[in-house]
Length: 343
Image (spheres, one colour):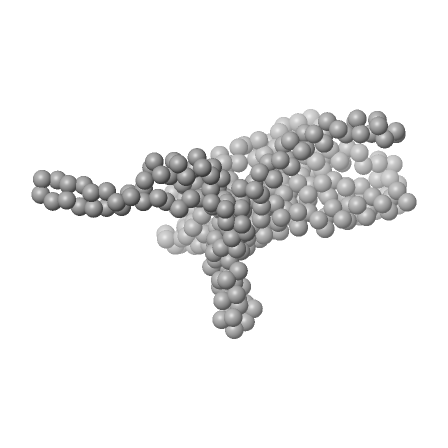
């Protein structure tokens, strides 16, 4: 293909990517270098018939002038990234110096908000992603084997968790695990413990959130694998059957190798989605026991009077860096496989 034709072909895509991906990221990166203005206080004296009192109040006119003069806020450089709410270099150094062992260091590290959120985010990502892939694969195998007459309804019901809005789905499960819900009440009856609640324990909260993540995302991998199963060479499967291969051996040596590219695609999508986990934490009101990087951003922005745009932007940039680090090994392996096949 001539270079001119090639550039004319990709130019619209490049323009859209620059406009809707690169520019917003650069904007967020620039915003992360600023913090909110210090509050301008003014002493006000209020008097009643019996006495006068002086108190400090925010000078609204001075704050408006500051915001007009510097709309982005006060320049802070990389200070936001290294403060106690984010990478906390000073606090980490102190913890390292005072910790007798690695385990003690890691335990103390999770007391810092950013590292606590990072711990749950990574645990959620690396546990939910493989479970979603495995669950979706076996659901696809099961649905592919059902009779054609009932295949349509089975596919519809299998996709229901993905159709439900994430926040609504998490709220439904939240009510089910409540002490008055069907799951919560059943567990209390099984363990004969009326005080047992899934919401009180961090471990049980993490478990419930991950179960919800698998339940909600498994239909995505199921539908991708189901589409891939329709393209598995039937001649190869029949040859394997003639050679005496069992059903599991046909799956292992014929179906799985055929679906490897789809597995890579699902893994990439799930790694990105799971690293940005937010809705289950909000729906379950689980912020006391589980926090994520996306929840830190949400928490910074929901402060009504002075949203912490700089802090939220810094966490967003760290999240982007985390996603890039997660995806890099998968992309490198995909690139090597592509080169191996083309040479």
